[in-house]
Length: 133
Image 1 (cartoon, one colour):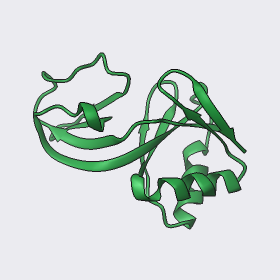
Image 2 (cartoon, one colour; image 1 turned 30 degrees about the horizontal axis):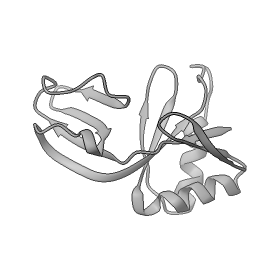
Image 3 (cartoon, one colour; image 1 turned 90 degrees about the vertical axis):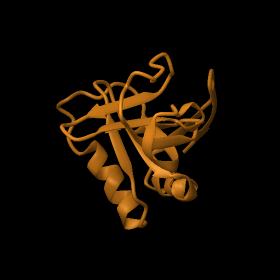
């Protein structure tokens, strides 16, 4: 399986309202429940109306479009990283999944995944720079 290493730092935040969000950004993840609105966004583009913030995340994107019938994709990645004592935060979209890892554990997580035969491509803002196998 191929994973794309996103070249951004991310924050995981709570916000009061989505009114100040810039939805033209490349990566904005919003979830709303009965008692909170959560936001994951590029750290440099965090809005001013946050009420709580957990900074310091990097992300891997599962390359390609995942079929809803695929089973165990996140479980396998999660198990590999759990064995290495690396925590993750996962966001799923219609097409794929994003695995967020604290910055201080990110390089080690990539090493563990490569050791388990994952291909990791480093994605720049406009082009793919490098492939690790």
